[in-house]
Length: 490
Image 1 (spheres, one colour):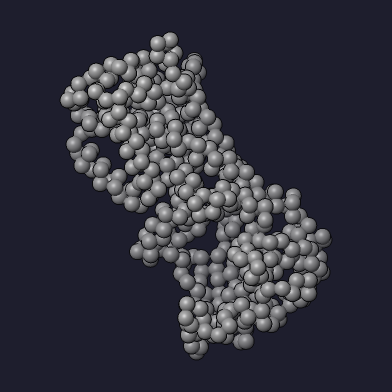
Image 2 (image 1 turned 45 degrees about the horizontal axis):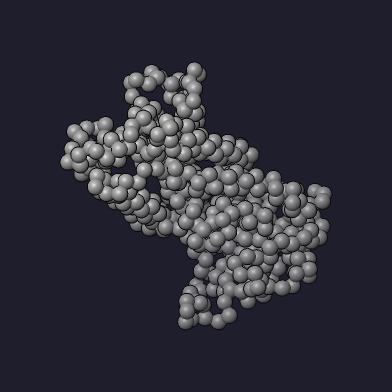
């Protein structure tokens, strides 16, 4: 929710001459009560709604477009992604690799992805130095070993999906642009939680506190009350989804994501690592700069026998790895092949095995069932955030949440405009903010607990902490300008 304002409180403020506030003696101190907490939350919700809503709006719009990437990929890249006709027998990986390398001899073999869907093509991924972080993916018909096409991909994503992903994450502005999405994710849960408290706990003079009164807008309401009803009730319906998007977005953001990683390390909550060292082999010595001595994995992968891909895949299948799997050549002579499940749709499959291709045997195995709960929740949360965990149902829910967030933002700004003073001697373009100084009326126990809690929260979510501090500094500066004896700013 962006700028829900309690009706009785705001009407009083909008009809009050700001000069009356200026004439109030600064030494007057309101009595301390829990009403101060509501007033402070009202002001925070208002400013967060006005100033953060543009970030939320952009995130919702770009996220809405990204939701449809599976369908857009099929529409744009159908020739590469799908086979012409499903056959009876899949060709060996060695033949498919040979066809791909014949068409594209550049670079080195990085991975091979074999699909579970019989209508999808095999992906032969090549590391090409000129592409930097991106890779060249050659799409091969597994039944005919004919090359269907090639695309420049990023972690398996097509060019279109990569472009839309960058748009949503950083607006194509690189690391600096990622701040926009982290601001949105950091504040989304704050404005949603604040809006829920303000709407559910509104004063007795408002509508009765019934389930219907919380979930549905008032039928007979007009003007700003009608807008507020739609804004708040929609926010209640979307709250869980918005909390989910905020939490999962923060887990792989830049600054909050780093804090989350530290928490996983401290609680041993990361996914178990696969041991890829072959039995009896010595770990490769590290050369200067942290690279392995010798030529490294690129040359080893380039020289990998295509037939060994079939051997590694057969060993992994025998070990129980079904569905879509990704086969990766060893990084060096002392390392094993890695075969990993990559089924993202629920029920997910993320088992991984290390294979000694020379002996056709599995040397190490990590199972999804053995992952710590935190690692599972983190992985599933990301997949749900991206709209792939539950297929089309996941996409529909995300699209509905994104559309709802867009409406919440627009309704919030409409309320701000509807609450503007309209008397000729006090006319303004937009409504005024709730009264300042609410923190002075907070009970002392609330301040004693709240201030340290805010400090800890600001450390855990650095972007939230920095922007909140900026809001406070601006608010203090405005208060000093408007105080009696200072320059009056409207």
